[in-house]
Length: 215
Image (cartoon, rainbow, N blue to C red; front, side, top):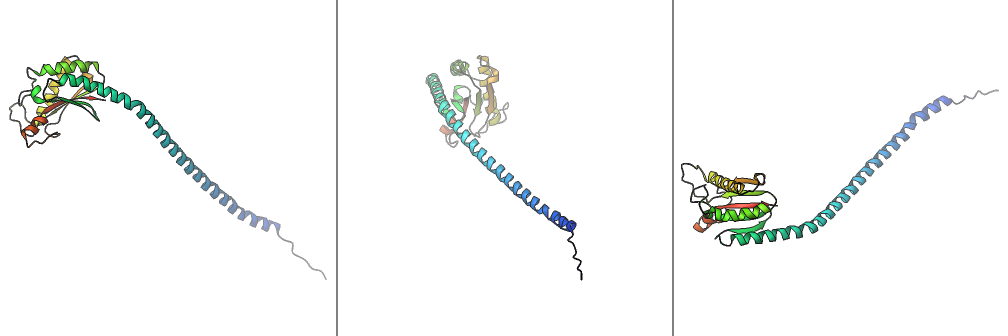
């Protein structure tokens, strides 16, 4: 009696083994991909922290260097201009974020409702121009009025009046030797008051020209 044992089909086993092998590769790929993105995120987080830390350090260094210089410059400049303005009632100078602001009441420069410099305007502007010529940086000239409507055939509004006044001062400074590229002129009309327009004293303060030495 003989038995015929069926031999295993090696090709079928190999085929089964080969078809399941991709699962291992796919799993490895997902693991590597996940690791890659985790690594990228970690690197970006570290770089951001380093960048922020570096930026903060630079800011601290520059503040230490810049602040004393800026403060000393402002104080010297303000003292010099204060000496000039002592004889002109109502004129002031002070430091603001935008720069050094010289405020001149309109009565020092103009007749009521006029945009032409009066005969006494040169007294203050000549002295200021002498100091401004020695200083660097841009200079902004800004005209302001009170809220009383202007009554003039030539000038239509307070906005126009404030702009023309700023331009008159700008032209005077150019004629006094200040480079035109340093200068700009703006009119704000009644829209940036520094005092209450309901009182005569407040209106007088609002009618002004500001010369701003921009930092």
